[in-house]
Length: 279
Image (cartoon, rainbow, N blue to C red):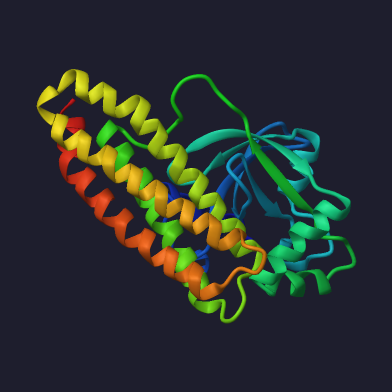
C-alpha cells in the first residue's frame, strides 16, 4: 500500500492502542518493524496476522497477490529480528519462514478463515510465504504501551475484549462447522488470558496487598473470580479440542466466558485503576 496510507494507519493504531477504522477495521492487525535489507533503516508496516499459540503469530506475505514479495518480507530474510506492536504490547520477535507441510497447513487455515487469501494466491505465480514471528523472551515485565499501571491494566483488558469480540463474531459466522483457525484463535486467547491472570496472581495482587492491606477483600474476590474464569477457559478448551467439535457447544462456552470475564474486568478496573493511577 502507498506509504502515506500506511503512515495514517500507523498513527491511528498507535494513538488508539491497536484500534483502527477504515480499510483495516475489524481486522487483526500488528505493526511490523523490519530492518531495511539495503538501507539498514527501520521500516514499519501494518500487517494482518493470525493467532498461533502463546509464543508466535503468523503473517502472510501476500502483497495483495502481486508478482513480487512485499518489501518487509525481503527485509526479514536479511535480518530476521523484528519488532512487533500489538496495540497493547511492543516486543522483539524472530522471524522464521515456514516451508513444506507446515506452510501449507498454516495457509490452508488462513484460507478457511478468509477465502481472500486464496484469491491472492490465484493472482500470482509465486508461492505466497507464511512467516512465524516468535516472541523473544526478555527479562523483567513486558513493555506495555501505557504511561501508568492503571492505564496498562485497561489497555490489556481492552485487547482481550477486542479479541473475544472477534471470536464471537467468527463463531456466529461459522455455521455448522468450527474451522481450524477459529479453534486456534480460541486456544490462543485462552493461553493469553491464563498468562495474564497468573501474572496478576503472583505479581500485581501481592504487590497491592502489601501496600494496601485495606484492599484484602477486593483482592480475595478477584482471586476467586480468576478461579471461576479458569474453569470456564478449561471448558472452552475442551469444546474446541474435541474429536468432533460442536459449534453450538463452543459458542455457548464463549458466551459464558464473555459474560463472566466482562463482569470481572469491569469490577477490577473500578476497584484497582484509581489506586494504581494514584501510585
